[in-house]
Length: 309
Ligand code: CP
Ligand code: NVA
Image (cartoon, rainbow, N blue to C red; front, side, top):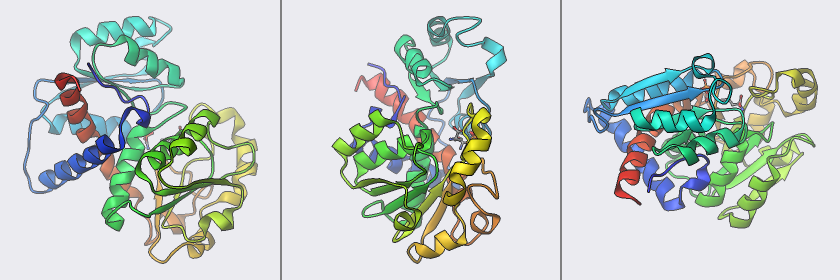
């Protein structure tokens, strides 16, 4: 049976750990100049309803390094769900390509693609989730701190798609996750409930920034206005202003804290220049690791699908 990754729920804790190990191995091999064309002759379709720098380039570059090929389909190219139904796009693409990565507004769209495609489908960001980002971030934390065990991750800002994927990761891997957000901007209620029920570590949602920053090993933030929410920008700027990741927040965390942001950043809003460019920042390492993590994901998904696991 083919495997998909529409949220991190699609991976067991053991699978997530072996994916991270594979990503680290592929990264090391690349650094040593070893090319392994594990996906020679394979094609990846990128179906994107929203803009992207990192996700698109890392999928394309990663697939190239693995000996495969990528076809990028912009919103106006195929008019997903408008020119043609999601079902027909999924079924037609399955005739030609080996794997699909889709960036969508509705989570339902990527789930429908997965349900109707006969090839693996990867969520390359939806309004609900951003699993590829979190796999790369976990790899980055492992590299920076040696392990995920006992790590305390604090996210400041919106309970958005990135946070929802953090919650699932925390529920599987057993590190502590805290979100400090303004009232009304909590994560998806269903995702939060499932994550808390399954949590191997602790999950805390608070409105108290100081409490959240105190003792944090990782301080993470993301834009206050996600793609598709542009009409709410003014309200959000006001609501999130007290949650900016600035030097006074960094000073409240542990010595050796690392600062993370999935990017793109709105400098001067959710994070200051001083912090994103400062010594604690690992944001460019995160961006780099998107490619290694997604190479591992592509290899693993295709192998797992073919093995019928
Ligand atoms: N972090 C991330 O997904 O970046 P892009 O939107 O540029 O792909
Ligand atoms: N939360 C952001 C993430 C961008 C990578 C958004 O959805 O726009």
